[in-house]
Length: 351
Ligand code: ASP
Image 1 (cartoon, helix red, strand yellow):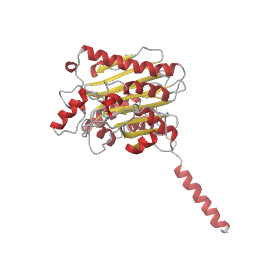
Image 2 (cartoon, rainbow, N blue to C red):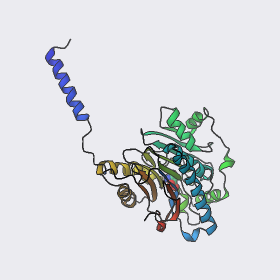
Image 3 (cartoon, protein in one colour):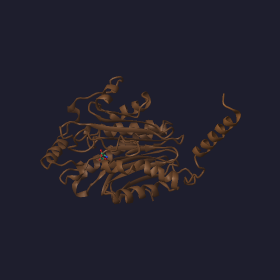
Image 4 (cartoon, rainbow, N blue to C red):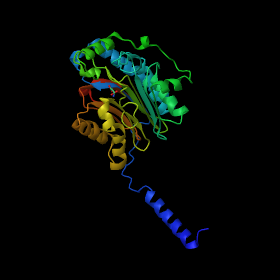
């Protein structure tokens, strides 16, 4: 048995250590403002060199229509009192099934002529997250990412392991023909000729296509984020981008905001973009827009990183911030109308 004095010393030391570990009471979070939107969803379909001269009116129309369907699906969930997680997944499933985007069905090709898809979800309520990387047979990788979050104690499964995990569930599996689009195949051939490892949108002759993502706030004030991608054309050696890396391409915390990113993934990983935006809100007291501007328009650009983010904060403020000529994007907020845009100069539809 310990002598009394030694015991008292141990207890005193333990309580000092505990005090040192307690979080400092210096919450710099922005003052809670009146709720800007009781609930709402913001989505993107990829950022990059999207130029008016490269898109026909007919194609523009198809993009707007696809974005609207995804917004509508997410909004209906939220309007009916559904969760932010259900809403972002509903929107992303629609975008994954639309070959206009580089996710799910429209995914780009790897250097081997295969498709390796990445996806992630995060729930702002409890920081729960799920992700998959390099999956090849899932029609909707976002659904598998959600199952990783809900049905496993883990966060990220890759390649064969992810497919084995998927075997336990009744998820739709598809063959390579599901992902075949002539346009993506031609892009691969051109990238191979030039021995380029590149995002589709770096190729001048290719129409820019992009990753898809959604963020939402539900009626209970909970936030969620979801992102899905085919990655980069001609990618090699099991390359994984920012999308399934929690904090880089996808992040949600009810303490600040939910973010889904798109762009050159390596830069988004190195700058931990999604978490960095939320962290600036939490620790520096910045608004969502101030934080997104600092990270996307300054920090990322300073490092040569191009792309954009969509975000929604705990009070329903939103951001659609891009440092590229365009980003397929849209929002549908409670009490408002759906808004969709393609080019940077179209703004975010708010006064
Ligand atoms: N961020 C994606 C990646 O690097 C690509 C994109 O957003 O277009 O895999």
